[in-house]
Image (cartoon, rainbow, N blue to C red; front, top):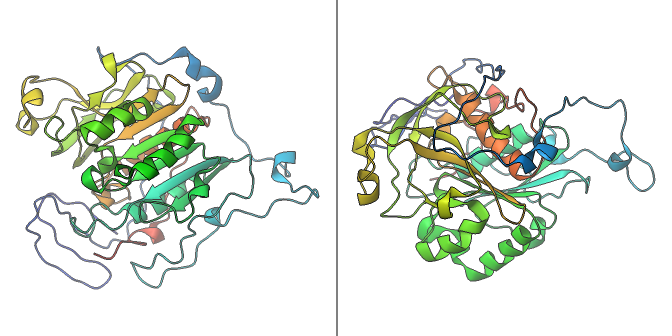
Length: 383
């Protein structure tokens, strides 16, 4: 399995291939046979930071959770026009065992849900991030793990897209949420005006918009167009992206924090986003006071000791939803190892943010986010 010791990295993957990385942000990739940490947790009474936004009362209709149970037979929505049960979605069926750690051919890509009434979530994984080492910015492998977790929530069907944009843009049609986990900045797919226009059609139709890690990085000109969809974005020279250890101890009362308990996680946590005016519609999901050495831009240095937001939920003016999560640099933070005891909570926040953005109910105790230890280290990019 992949562990996550600090800074200097020793890479060990299947065969023992090792070397100290010059990049201080590199992480170790090591194999382990340890069992996954339990992802079950009891929800604690949440408290909000003094400057956190209050949850909109409009959330209650579709985010107040109910106990979900498996039905004894298919419902009308789960049958074909001839009354036959719908075939299973192959994305949620067991996948073939990959031939090696980089075999991505076994992962179903751009497959439409069988049930047109399912909550459809399109997960767009970026092309291999060649400026980052093995174990960092593993967009496809991380997206595959997200698909595995989303399949555990009844009524949800994920659709995986690779290389930063679908081969058939029609796959976005009917999406309840569109998730970007990819390189941003100048490499962001939405720097292409045609792609931006395509996405705008689906956002305008009500699709939720989720950005993970580097995907929140936009130029000021593009960011101004993204703000009404996402609520905030990373601006180079204004925001910062240090690697630091967070201690998330208290949470806003919001469906995304259902079943989420305190966690301490080191990652590349961006902060000091450009927000919509007055943070209107923003709920701070994760926030902490970072070390002062991380404040390296004039605006961050002007606010010593301030609690900073690293994940947020956004109620859009048009009734749609956005979710931003700035962690996700290390592949190792997704998986269960002795070095990552809080990985289930890390995963839960992301899965909840996706479900919430899609207007899908979230159980009071949290959505399931278990991972099979056998999947540790699979579907990695070739770098």
